[in-house]
Each structure stands twice: as structure tokens, then as C-alpha cells.
Length: 297
Image (cartoon, rainbow, N blue to C red; front, side, top):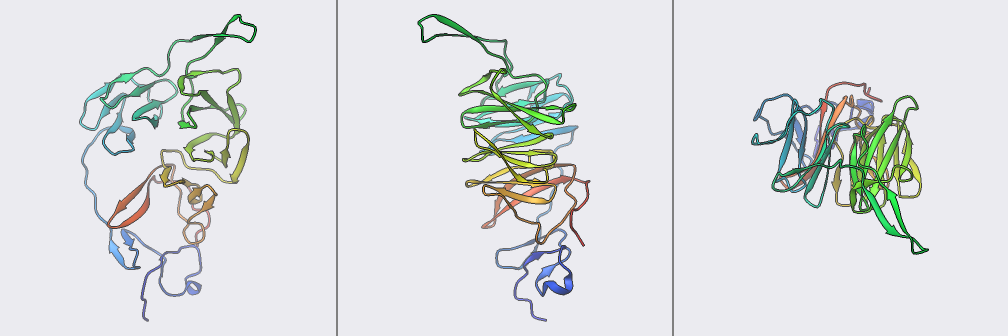
């Protein structure tokens, strides 16, 4: 049998019907752009600790770790201590890294200086149409929020309401990332929000049960299945790639990239990024083992 090129992994279709070139198992190998098989690169342990969350900046110049109750740099410079053990979430804008876990929050600047994000309530004074001075009472970042993101000049923060099984997503004033108007500036999404990812046309919202797109005016359902918790979305030019309960997907437009050929246990936590190496570009996802494959043989 002459196989000129390998097509990749397919554990969904009956092997007797796939034809030559498909692999039913592909452990520790890469399929190159020419269709050949290469042993994947290995890895080695570089650091040990009680790590619960890690964030690398967009330029790959800074790496932050939550080690137990301490937020520090990769070279062990302590930035914040005494953190709660809640899962930390991250978002970046203008070279500033924002972090939040529902209790602890802050802003890390390029020189690793840390500043509070949640600040005391602010009174904003302005002149009304009748010429009188009016006051608008604004709010800080709400306690109990976790997943955060920036989109269209605003900060977004999700707060799950278990009794209603829905999530309130609060958004800040434009370019006033520490100022929130809790009376009016929010949207409500069914389910537990696990991901907020920015796209030019919409904020992609992944919950435990569905995927939505919010364009600033309306909420559109993209998929009737949800995403895995974790920081697994990545920007590839203008599209967002992320990990769901049914594999890798992209938006916008929404498309499942793997369901026709690959079905794997989605994991209970995931981290993902775009890796460019050897002239190829891959979406790489690391999973904490768990869950059930949706449609494997």
C-alpha cells in the first residue's frame, strides 16, 4: 500500500471507510504540512510549585504565576501575597495585565508595579442640559466576578448567579476600566460563563452549555454546547480559536474545526495558544484530564 501523505487523526469515522492516510491513533507525533509524520518535541520540568494559574503577555516577554496564595513573576519576584485560592483570570490591554478572582484583583504594569483595580466608589460630576451640576454615582469592579476581558474600549467581568443559573456580565465605562454603572451597564447570559474572548465583530461568550456572540446590542447563539473552563482562547489574525466540549472551534463565523474527524475527552480545565514553529502554525491546547468524548468510535 502506497501512502503518499498522512492526512491526520480520525477516530470518528469507521477505519474501513476512511481510506488510506488517516490515523486512528496519533500519540506524541506531529503531522507536517507536507503530510509526513514527525515525533513531537519533548518537554522538561523547569519549575515546581502549587501553580493554579499562569499568564504570558501577548509579546511573550513576561510570565506571571499564581503559586498557592502568591502572585509572582517567573523568576520568583513576589508581586502580591495573601491571595485567596479562587481561580485567577487574566486580561491584557495597553501592555497592562489585569487579574481577578472574585476577591483579589489588580493591574500589573510593564515594570511589574501592581496597582489596585477595585477602587473606592467614585462620584462623577457633570453639567446637565439645564446647566445644573449633577452627580452620577459609579461603582468599582463588583466583588464575586471572575472571568474578565476587554472589548471595544470597555472592561467586561462575569458574575455567576447559581440560584438563577445565569451570569451577569458587567461592563465598564469606555476607557474607564475601574468605573462601572451597575444600574444599567450589564447583560445577562443563561448558564455559567467560562470564557470571554474578543473579536472585531463581537464578544465571544462561552458558558458551560452554549456559545454566544454579543455585538453590543444583541446576543446570538453560536453553538448548543459549551466550553471547558480555563484560558484557552487564542487570536489567529481576525479569528478566535477556543476549546469546547466538542473540540476546537473558531469564530466568527462560527465553525467546529475538529468534529468531523476527532473526538476526545474535553478535559475539566484547558489552556491554549497559537504556536508558530518550523514554518507551521498550530493551535496547541493542554488539558487537565477528564470529561467524556462526544462522538468517538
